[in-house]
Length: 107
Image (cartoon, rainbow, N blue to C red; front, side, top):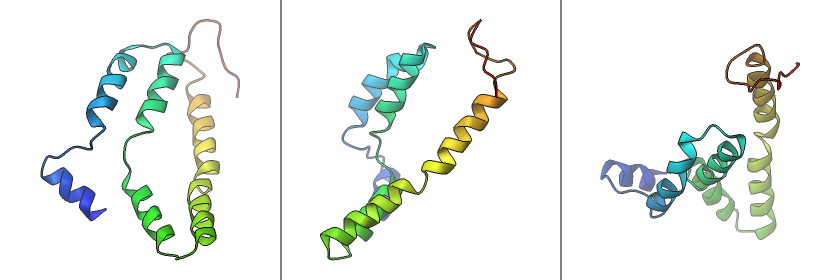
């Protein structure tokens, strides 16, 4: 993580940043749900310091099985809170906002 932070302070971007910016640019202006989904997929390839930390911890276990279990635990831990926050946001927006006509959601 320190390496990543040091790289950002020097103004160095991730090697794939130009490609991600090129792919994400047309998706950001569209309001179509498929474009929003595509934007989420593209932005999923951005580097994350937490992932680097978890990879380092998994590599430090010295065992392929323990490392795989550690990464599985790291990746499954946020699933429930993220699914709950997504439901909360969709329910709070159901009363109005940007929903297309006829697609009113019930919570």
